[in-house]
Amino acid sequence: MKTILIWFCGTGTPKEDMASIFEGQTYDKKIIVSGVGTDETSQNVRTLENGYFPNNFNWLFTTRDIVLGYRERHQLSSAEEGMMQIYSELTDATPDNSVHLMIGAHSRGAADGMIGLLTSLYASCMIPGSTPNEDILFKKINKISLLAVDPVNGAEVHDTKVGMFFDTNDLMGFNDLPKDQQSIHHLLETIETRSDKKGLFDVVLYTARFDARDEFLLDKHWLKFLNDIQKGEGFKGNFKYYLGGFRHSAMVYESSELTGLYDRGYTPIALLRQILDDIKLNTNDADLIYKNMATKEIMLINDLVSEENELLEANTHTKSYSWAEVLTSYGESLKTIAQKYKDDGNPMINNRYLKHYLN
Image (cartoon, rainbow, N blue to C red; front, side, top):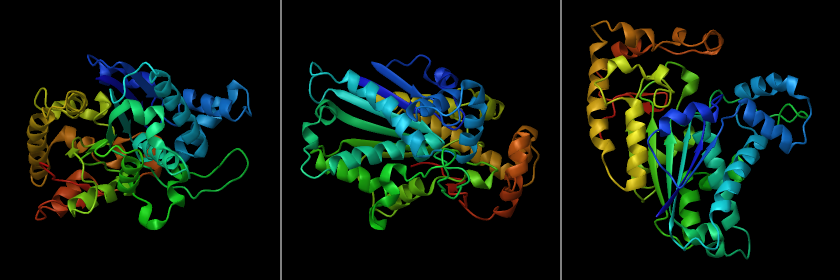
């Protein structure tokens, strides 16, 4: 089966930074979309808008975008970049039901970029008189796998429209749906039904176990997706839920991974690579890595109650981030939380189950 991967990077992450994650992995087509707030994304947005400033003002756009996150223009730009390349691969010569589409994303790329893309697919299926199963995308695709890696929307800024500096982010229409339809599960179920592709989607949610910054809580839409499944009311397809790492970017940046805490081969980045392989090959080898990694992480958290761990303590409080983040971040350290919740079996901290072990 032909495999196409599209990956939406997180805030401020250029696609070049993700190259190491995919080392040794092969796909028939790999599409990496730089994150909001990168020079590339800002340039793409300006091209889409016909531009307002010359290139020497690019810093203004990138700084603004890092702070505000996805706006409608970023949704349009990233969706256009990704979908145009996907459709270019799906020619008439491609056999029907022969393509596995993997959609992965980190941070705002998962909280906004992925949900915006799914909403666009949903909207295309809901056009009156449309026949989604005749669209080349649904004719050629056999399976769509979603990999949402620590979906975080960041500090939510009130949407305001003031010329070129601000515009709204309704997730490509997601926020305009009736309240009872504003769920990822509703999008997936409707797309499957309307395209006559039952079982089209499978989903992996991989979140950080902890991040000291309270504004970096797990995205509310993905939390609802998870909680609905836990209650038996949501997505009925194949679903996996993993937690790993003590910082938001631990699974994509070695500098955030705190590699020295782990046994060799059982690290957050190793888990992400194995999840990608499992999705592509339909295997479950990530479960072993996760079991060993989760055991170590929960032991480290429990030990913090009465013992010192210089590496872990130094990297799990708000002062461990950049000077700009220190000025705007708030939240308790992991050591403080471990001591406060020492008698709680699995406290939820910033929408993350701190001591989650196995699915």
